[in-house]
Length: 87
View 1: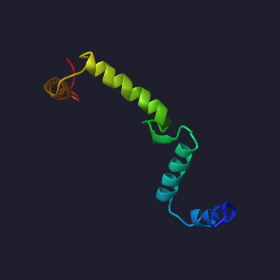
View 2: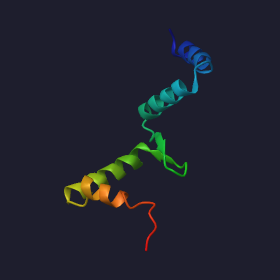
View 3: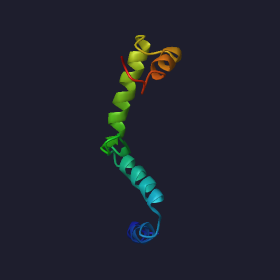
View 4: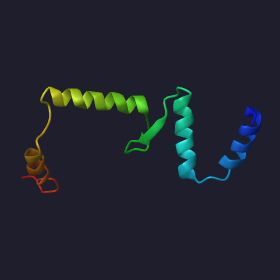
């Protein structure tokens, strides 16, 4: 099958797929072409790219390796106070 025929058929098929599959295809093609795909959104709805999230995660790993983290016990104690009125 020629590239022209494949493109033509893909256009027809893409028009019929659901949004979830369409997003998956978009991410695969974007990644294949070397683009920095959007792989998530922050709490304010702003898009987050793969490279941006990689940078954030690498920074978090570096912090943990330096001992800059909170233990589960400390987190549980701190979170137990959330929502309680302060004096």
